[in-house]
Structures are given as C-alpha cells and as structure tokens.
Length: 238
Image 1 (cartoon, one colour):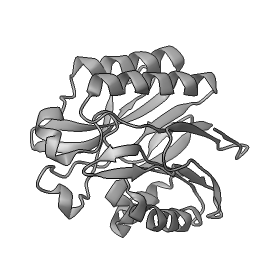
Image 2 (cartoon, rainbow, N blue to C red):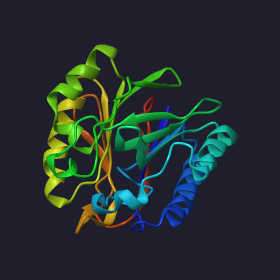
Image 3 (cartoon, rainbow, N blue to C red):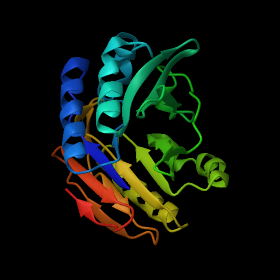
Image 4 (cartoon, rainbow, N blue to C red):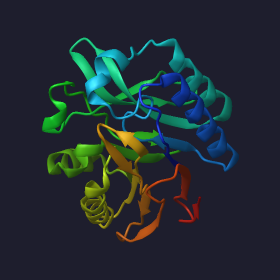
C-alpha cells in the first residue's frame, strides 16, 4: 500500500485557496499510485486557534463534496484537517473520505492546554482500514500522550500516522517519540505543514520510520511537498 504525506503551506484563513492546493496534492498522489493521502493538522484553514470561531465548518459544508468526489473517482482515501462544528463546540478534526463511504470524523481528544480556550475534545476513531491495513491516527499533542497510544494498541495497527502543526522546537521530541513508537513493530508517519501558523512558523519535516524505528526519509522545513511511502517495498517517492 502506498501512503502519501502532503506537506502543504496553508494560506491563513483562506479555505478556498487551500482546497485548490489540496486538490492538486491529491491528483499528484493519484498519479504516483497512492492509495491514501494525509494532510497536516487544520490543513484547510491553517493552524490559527484564535480564528476558529470564524473559520470552523459544518460536516455538511458543500465545499467538502469535492474530496468525496475525488475519493470516489480515483479510489483514494483522503484525510484533511479542519476545525469542525459539533453540538458540543468546535473540535480539531481529520475528515476522512473513502471511496463510496460516508465521511468519517476523527476528533482530537487530547488537547494541549493552549487549545482549550478555543476547542472542545473530540472522539478518537479506532484504526481505520485501508486495503486491509489498519491505520491508527493521532493529531499533534496526542502524539505525546501515552494513554492515547496505549488505548490504540489493542486494535493492533499496522501504521501510526501523526497529523501535526509543529514549530521547530517540536520536531526533535516528535521524531524521538515516533521512532520509539515505530520500534514497537509498526510503521510511523509524521505529516506537518510549513509557513505561518499561530504567530509562528510550522517547520515541516514530514517523515517516515520503519518497524525498527529507523528514519527512512523526511522533507525539509520550508518547502511544500509530497512524500509517498510503499509499505510493501519500503520505497520512498518524493
């Protein structure tokens, strides 16, 4: 199975422009034979907690239909990041589109204290199935929460993917954590953005670790790009 990580440079608050960029990343991933593509935390809006009251979208937002259409047409699984309106409040979500299936919502359950004024906890999904491969998900701060990983492990995921918005100071501890996770016997993937976010800069570094905890490849800290990992051959395409 080929998994694509899309390291985007979101335009702050411009959902329409970000959707256009997402579509191009998806089409590029399709051209490279990817079975699934994952985007960074809040990729559709940029990571801007103070703006979420304005930027949050509803699950029925018509702009999301494009992702389902792309999923159906190209038989690709797509996970995009968005602030999502729920009855309880706004959650940080990964919206997951699978061919011919209803949209799934992975909600960030473990919030960083800095996020609590703006968001409410969501509901984690169990690992999702993609071509008989079990993919466990995490959003940013959840990567550092031991309980999050321990709760997931009984489902025996084959792959662990962290969708994040990390500044430069967060890269090294994230890499160490993902190497440790991978060394338990599963592939670990990390997808970050680049560019402005929450009065700082996201530092990219989207990366893949093998089941021994060895770093196989990473992107740089300033450019957008696509990293595609084949779980069968362990080959990387950039």
